[in-house]
Image (cartoon, rainbow, N blue to C red; front, top):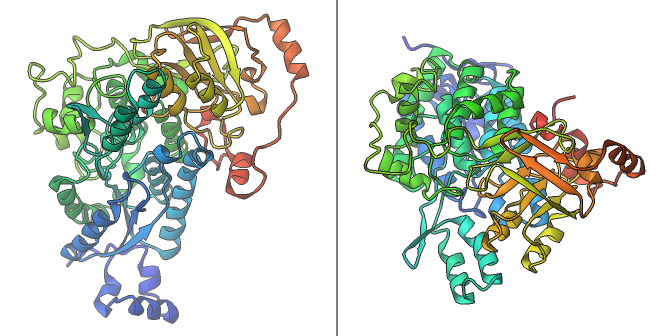
Amino acid sequence: MEKKINNFSKKITENTELPAAHSMLYAIGMKDSDFYKAQIGIVSNWYEGNPCNIHLNQLSKIVKKSMSNNNLIGFQINTIGISDGITMGTSGMMYSLPSREIIADSIESVINSHFYDGVIALPGCDKNLPGVTMAIIRLNRPSIIIYGGSISPGYYKGKKLDIVSSFEALGKKNTYKITKKEYKNIIKHSCPGPGACGGMYTANTMASILETMGIMLPYSSSTPSTSTEKKIECKKSSFYIKKLLEQNICPLDIITKNSIENGVKLAICMGGSTNLVIHILAIAKTAKINFSLKDIQNISDKVPFIGNLKPSGSYLMNDVHSSIGGIPSIIKYLLNKGILLGDCLTVTGKTLYENVKNSPDINFKKQNIIFPIENPIKENGHIKILYGNISPKGSVAKITGKEGNKFCGIAKVFNSENEANNAILNNKIKPGTVIVIRYVGPKGGPGMPEMLKPTSYIMGAGLGEKVALITDGRFSGGSHGFVVGHITPEAYSGGVIALIKNGDSIVIDAENKTINLNVKKEEIEKRKKLWKPTLLKINNGYLYKYSKLVSSASNGCITDEL
C-alpha cells in the first residue's frame, strides 16, 4: 500500500464540507481519483521580457507533464521577475532587490492558501533564486529548486561575449577605443538566447550556492538553459519530490548552518558576486539560523580563490559545464580537500558527498578555469567585510587582488548614480579619485540599486586600477574593480557616508579590512549636527512600503524583521 503523502491538500480534497472547492477542482479537470493524490505547486518566474526567464514556462510544462509518472498532481503557478540587465541604471532598478520579497510573499501566499503538499520552483534571474528559497523556508514542506540555467556565450570577431561586454563597450566607445559599428555589434551579439547571465554573476553565484547547500538536484546550477540535460532534470524532478514527500524531508532539514557555510565557501572559491552577502543573510534570517557578516568574513579569510570566471576572470558557467564536469566536480574537489562538509542532507535524499562521489575529477593540466588549491589565484577569498568610521556596521568589498589591496584617494561625491555616470562618461573622473555614490541604499534608493553601469564605465574607460568607488548601494555580480558597497548605516539614515565632502581623503585597506574617512572626529561630529534628513524619494506604492519596512544591508534587507 502506497504511503499517504497528501498531508496538506487533503484539507481541501478530502473535506466533505467544502463542496464549492471541490466543484472548482472538477472544473479545472481533476477526476475523482486525483482527489487522493499529493499536489505540487510548480512555481515559475516566467515572463517574456527577459532572456533569463523567457524559457521557464517551457521547463515548467516539462515538470508538470512528469507529475503523472509518479501519481502526483502538478499545478503551474507564476510569480514575478525583474530584469536587472534591462533596468540597470534606470529608476526601474529600484524594484530589483524589493522584487525578492514579492516573490517570497507571493509563493508563500499561494502555496499556503491552496494547501499544496510540495513545491518545485524554477527561478531564472538574480533575485528569483533567493526569493524562492526564502519562500520554501517559510513554508517548510518538501521542495526542490530547478535553476533555469546559464545563457550561451555570444561571439563577435572571434571573441567570447556576455552581458557585461555590452556595458563595458559604452566606456570603450566614449574613450574612442572602439568604433560605433563595433559598439553596435558587441551589443547585438552579447546575449544570443535564453538563460541567465553567463559569468559568476549573481544568478550563477546563487545557483551554485543553492546546489551546494543541497536544495537543488546535482548539476542544476551549471547545466545550460537550452540543453537536453536541463530538460532531463525537469523530468526527474517529480521522482525526487515524491521521494521527499514520502520521507517528509523539508527545506529546514537541508538548509542548516553547515549547508549555508558549504554554499558560501564554494561561491567564494569561485569568485562569486557580492550580492551573495545580502541574500545569504536574508536566507539565514528566514531560517532563523545565526549567520552574520562575521561568518562570511571568517569563510573568506580561510578559503582560496580558485575560479577563473568572469567578471574578474576569463570563463563562463558554460565552460564549467563543458570542460570541468559541472559544479559537482568542484564540490567533489573541495570535499576531498576538506573545505566542504560532505554529510549534509540534500533533495536527492542522499548526502552531498553521495551526490558527487562519482563525478569526474578535475584535470588541472587540461584547463585553467579552476586552479588547484596549492596554486590559487588568491590565497584567500575576494569578499572583504570592511569596517571603519565610514561603515561602523559593515560594508562589502570585492577585491580579487588585481586591483591591489589598498587605495587612498580624494573623494568625488555624487548623490545619485546618474550624476556619477555622467561624470565618468564625460571624462571628469581623474586617477586617484574615490567616487562616492550615496542615497542609494535600501531606504534611500529606495531598493538599493546595483551600480553595474558606473563600474563598467570605469573599466571601459581604462580607470579600473586608478579609481575606487564606494556606495551605500549594491554592485552587480558583473561589477569588478576597486569597489565597496553595502555601506551601513546608509546615507538616508544619517551614516557617515552622508557627511563626506568633495576633496576629503578616504583610505580603503582590504588587508586590514578597514574603510575610513581621513577627517577628525570633531569635524565629523560637526558635520553630523548640520546634516538634515532627506525626504523619501517615493511616497506611495510598493517602494514606499518597502522603504518603511526594509532592514539594513548588514541584516540582509529583509522586510519582516519587526
